[in-house]
Length: 313
Image (cartoon, rainbow, N blue to C red; front, side, top):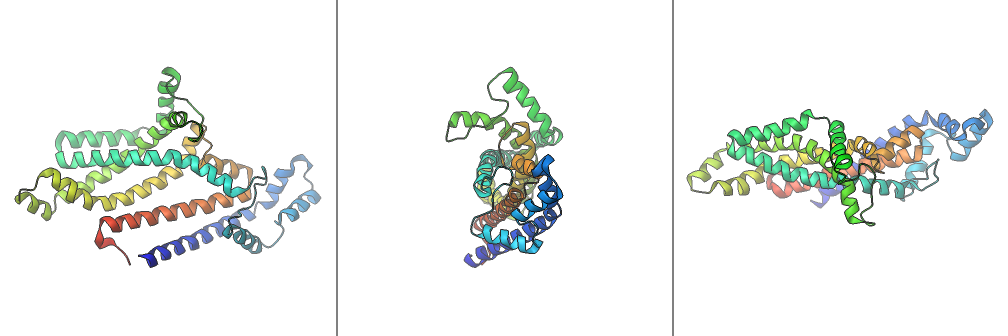
């Protein structure tokens, strides 16, 4: 198992190097434009060339990348060309904001999807139709429209929750909970729409297997069959769906953060791309790839724990 973890981490690092190298190659075509944007009206061929020399952007692209990589390995991802703030602490700060919204939404998604999926598969009939109806509603209603509707109801009319803004949990936990409530609801509804259907389908397959009929003939209760046997076997593919849902939520954070004015990872990446802030873009790319690698690794380990046949050595 240890060797497997090391191999996966090594593969993740190789992937991070490849992705960041390709990103750097694409960004290198805009170095001169970024320099002109920084200089503004004072940009001339001479001042632009001087700025590029001071940033090292006139060097060969491969040499520039390996200089960046050498610093990144030591935790130095450079500084923003606009704010002069160090990239790594800033990215981590923004990442913490995004995760403080995504993780509660993911937990609620897993709980609600499991309840709905198991209920629909084990009861059938009206329960199944209700579960599928809930999933269908989640698919039909766009997240942006849902967000606007919830803001109108809970922030504008009832004034229970703030419409925009973010309060760090260290400053005021209650205010933090209120500031993320609507974004979490929006993400949860979209997540449940996808994951509940996956859990339902997998549970139906499990409940049709021969071992379930054998357990029933032995007098084992339906609750025990569903919870102790079928759900455990269905949990492994559901975990894969959960990891994909996490990545989808992470990727969709840009819309949520812009709608609710959250200082998160997605809005930070969007603004950095608009400005052409090359060190920030590189840092965001590297942290994003590493996060996805860690999530996939944890999913594989959890699958191995739930299903011994899936364990790797």
